[in-house]
Figure (spheres, rainbow, N blue to C red):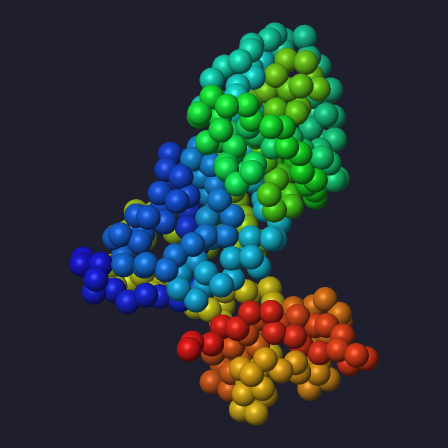
Length: 307
């Protein structure tokens, strides 16, 4: 299929990323094979990781900040007794220690202790930046990598199986959580080291693996790519949709705020968000409920109309 024959699509493609390529590698293959020049994603995955990668096409790239900020669910496996420079099995081994003396119930209790908000050490081999440069670039260059920490929240933890030195678990966490760091910090507390050996993202809210398409299926889709892409109106399924009349749509295009009382079907509260639709039900703008004086109004956060 000649990629130049395919038009640029707008919307969300839920991809089941394979292990091996980077997230950017996957996007570049779609870009080259299917002519999707305007492409991005909402939340990267490590090369080793598989699972839900939310790919944004065309106008969908405007949704990146709003789709990447939601919680994620991962299924992972960690192995005790080893420490690497990347916090996973693909890194260089820095130390190996005995684990056989550990009580499985103590390991279980420590993993369940992940629940809540914590300060997490960012892996030295990651895309996090220091003075404008990603940490992995500093690591590759043999330069000192500064220790960075960030606050993350673990909303749910489930141990799926335990056969020491391996533990398979599921976590639901805030955006930006490093599962590799969860394994690494566990190993430090237990005194034997631990690395992540497998990782699959099962959900990047509001999208799940059940909606995801294999990379090869996407690359071979050709003209049928449009059948795999969620259109813009479905790209934020967890946001309410407000249908505007012609006059309201014109006001929005000019940057005006609309009082929330114009839409009694959705009694908004300050901080709520909504997708505003044109009279023809096309996405017009992303809006947030804010006070303007004493009037709670829908303020335009991002316009989605075509120029």
